[in-house]
Each structure stands twice: as C-alpha cells, then as structure tokens.
Image (cartoon, rainbow, N blue to C red; front, side):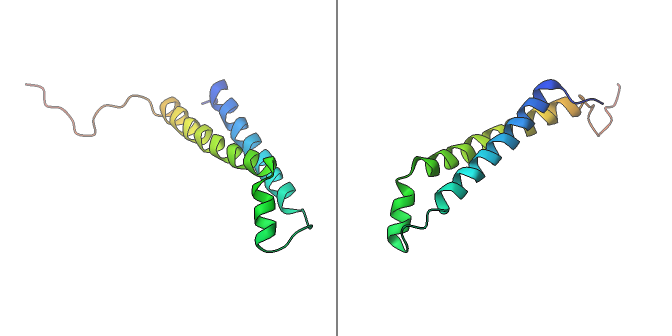
Length: 87
C-alpha cells in the first residue's frame, strides 16, 4: 500500500523541524564566551534557543498528527474480533 501525500508531508515536516531544532541548539551551545551560570543566562536570552524549543514543540505536534493519520490510513475499518451472533 502506497503512502498518502499528507502522511509523507507530515513526516517530512517532522524531519525538518527536528533538524532545525538540533541546529539551533548547537548554535546556542557553541558560544564559548561565558561559563557556568553566566553561560546559561546568556543562552536563555538568545532567540536561537527559543527557536529550537519551538521547533521541538511543533515537531511533537506534527509527529502526533503523523501517527494519527498513519493509523487511520493503514487500519481499515475492521469488524469486531468477537463474531456477532445472528438471531
């Protein structure tokens, strides 16, 4: 059974969001100007950190949508596992 276009699109969105989020975190963490608590405060003020966090939040939503759409597209309506009695 072939994948449907929306499922592939949402899957690609999860990959892109994960990649951007990871690169944003690496950009923030690669700043060697401060150390200790000052470094953490400096990182918290950078928009790249918040971009990374937003990407991971949206990736979670996209991943959930992908799971829901994949489940609905691959699981045909099945009859009950317990056979019904015909009276």
